[in-house]
Amino acid sequence: MDDTATPATIANVEEAAQAPQLPQLSRTVYRHRLATRLWHWVNAITIFVMIGSGLTILNAHPHLYWGRFGANFDQPWLDLPHWPGWVTIPAHYNLALARRWHLTFALVLGFGLLVFMVASLINRHFQRNLRVRAKEVAPRHLLDDAIAHTRFDFHNPDDPAAYNTLQKLSYVSTIFVLIPLMIFTGLAMSPAMDAAWPWLLEIFGGRQSARSIHFIAAALLVGFVVVHLALVILAGPFEETMSMITGRWKLPPERGE
Image (cartoon, rainbow, N blue to C red; front, side, top):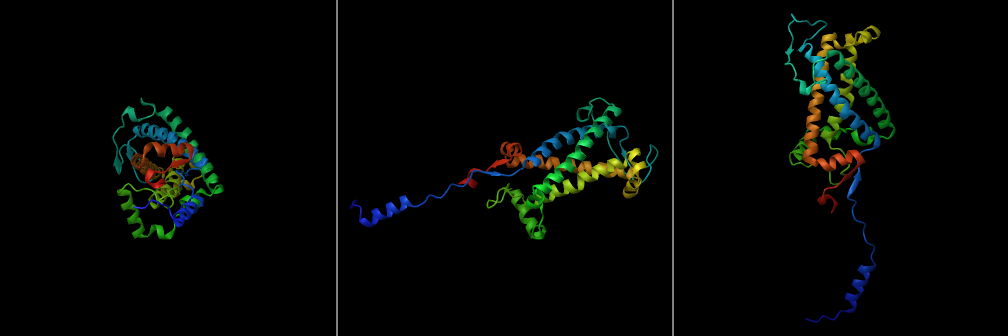
């Protein structure tokens, strides 16, 4: 076989060498702004303390009622067990101390949410990342998103920094429904706040109804945390955790090639 290079071959090689090289696809994307990262880690500590101290408070009367009144001889809609010391804060039963912990971190939760909302409006996080479009809540789209989750496919390869629909719905429900509901039902259980804002009790149908709603919202928030941690583990705990520390998420190898 003749190995002699023809003029045409030489011209093609020279043309290929002189052609501009396409840049390689970046292996990282910027996913989480500073305000989101700070709020995430503050909330991680805050919710942990509030759940533990809340369980201690619940141990004082582990029965839930609807309406304005609830006492030992009333019929509760839910009887709860006493929670063991290894899940409560403090570990030993101390109602006064648990209330101090709970109310202190309730202030952190409330003001943290306010600051995060203002920052997210300024940096357009809500509009850019959490806006749910009509087509995204169509049954077919939700089904496709759920099927993708069963395959552990959590990111759009064309826009890996984007949140998927189930993420948006869960975050929006938590930020705009669950946490505010916990804050306002908590205020409704305070005699001082009831004196200042008596309409709070009217909205929730009484202090015992507010207490029941507070518990349901807290249980849903715990469910959100459990699912969130499970998905972080499935998606890659190291990269997901680092992205919430540095803001940058490293693409999986097949995405970056």
